[in-house]
Amino acid sequence: MGLTKTEMFTEQQNKISLFAKVFGHPARVSILQHLFKIDSCVCGDLVNEIGLAQPTISQHLKELKNLGLIKGNIEGTSVCYCIHKENWTEMKTLMLAFLNQDLSKDQNCC
Image (cartoon, rainbow, N blue to C red; front, side, top):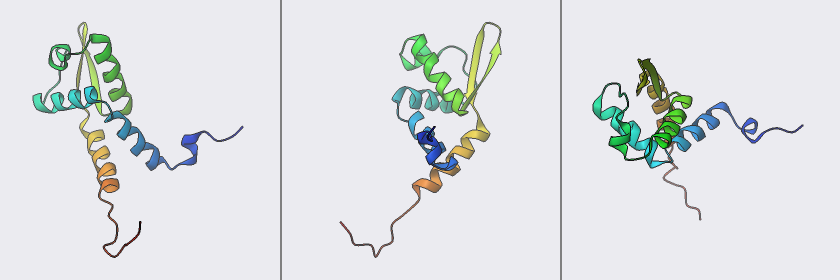
């Protein structure tokens, strides 16, 4: 059996791709911005803040959590979410290294 597409690329390339995907939806960006703005855990008021239905919010939270950018704790009957600081820092380091690549000043093509 052949390689899957992700096996063709390095672990770093796959991580960058996953991070880019998670930032590819404005609802996930909005959730992250809200978590940074309140600088604490949020327990259930994201529907009012973001303006999307609860199942939609839950799906976006699941993707953010699966990637490790947020973490959740069960408190009573609700789940509280916050930024996973260590993973956020790791993601920033990886993405900044990728985004800070520059072409040489002497390049003259296309």
